[in-house]
Length: 51
Image 1 (cartoon, rainbow, N blue to C red):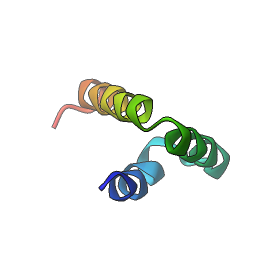
Image 2: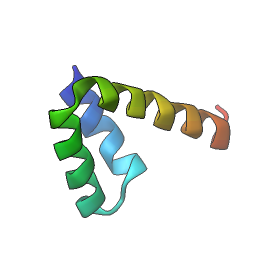
Image 3: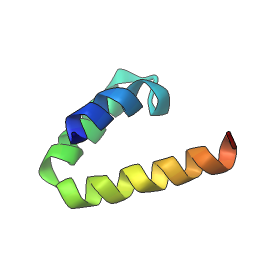
């Protein structure tokens, strides 16, 4: 499920592949903190782009 989220959010949040790679490696090492990071990014996206 987390990998699905990663493949879904990666193209939106980071157009640069290098940043995606760093986030992916960090995500693999720290699952819980990565989940918090995704929640934060989702919150920022919700604030900047209200649906």
